Length: 298
Image (cartoon, rainbow, N blue to C red):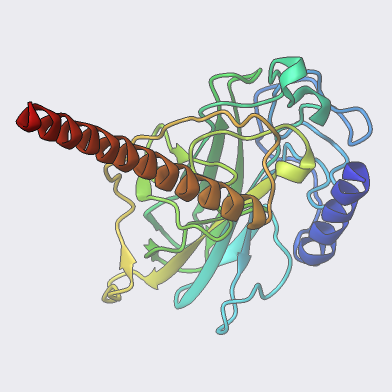
């Protein structure tokens, strides 16, 4: 049942994303590393090293870009090399996938498939002159993977002199869990990056395509010398909230039922504890009252 669900999820992701993604050869990915396939995943946590992903094709080429239409949708397919021009928005796509076999995620295997402290970092040029080619870089890192970081680049060539700006709040993560659609902090543009995650942005990613996802953000291109609109901001780092890793006893679920059950159990436990304390205090008070009455009679 689980295997069928995972296959279905991969198929659904492929149906949604594949028309937008053009599989092409890698340009500047790194480092050199062993590769795997969907049928033969890794025996340890490692990112973006599968060569036949149904969505991305070769995962080593995991940074893509596309022009956005006025309605915010992708105008064409995601590519790794694109000419950009003033007055348009472009969406950067960063895919991530812990290639460890799902069998290594459970407690019986000491959670060997889990990647910890997973972060994404990216940057793009702030300005380009006419005909100049710039790099959009992204890095996925983890303290428990081999290698500890993988990176890739997409390229943009300016049609005229332009400045490039981050569209405020556009950096988001998409996956099949509770963190889906969450806005990422501007630390994504720092050297170390910002945390990814499944139900929470706590840096924990299980192995298998069922736990994979992608990050997107929008770059607005302005003609050099033109005023900068109010809905863009400098991609400067911000204070990162501390994360608390609580390892689940079972593999995470995507539905809300488990959360509801936990909440109900917690409420009942608190109510039971309060009732027990109240009952004990009442019993002590009654016993003390009886003792006082007995002493008075004597």
